[in-house]
Image (cartoon, rainbow, N blue to C red):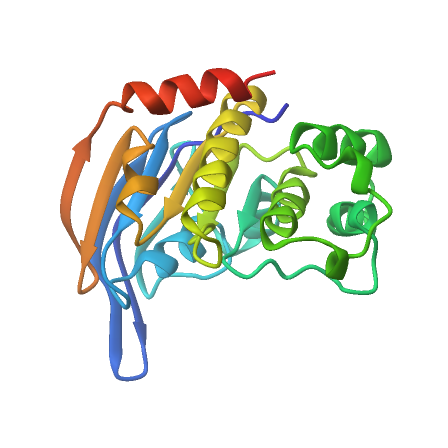
Length: 236
């Protein structure tokens, strides 16, 4: 289990040629929370994730983790505390399911048993019996479950998901968001999900709306009873 992380943007602006992706944004993601980022394409959702995950740097303002501004020298250590789930699964086609989960931790030393951790995660997402399969032998939903396991192999305290249900039908997408929420509780993580799907957003406990690189709304929500019932069935 990782230690949950709280992260913040303080007056952050991020510019690209001909575009201001974020404009003086202040945003705090509380330790242990599940937050949905919503808004139209181009509103800045992915940019927020990349900045909070240490994959990008702001032009102005600061990115903080646990109340401390991240310097360039601290970014590598910060990224090791972050798990990232993408819309496209990005699995390596020549590797088995198990080896895809192991891939992020193979190049370096870790303080846990890699294979034991990977096997535990595949059990947690319901794919223990597909450890030796290739990605091409799996459905889209199964591939996303492998990608989620891979994102958790490093025991992250912060889980960032960029449109994790975007390539899936509504039924499988609901299963994936329920799984993410269940795993967040099981392993103790802060979670931030960028999504166009109102149902995905409603399953989180806070919704932050972006528009043209600025925060247009921020509200706390309570999961509907059917969501809680579904999660009750998923908890170990």
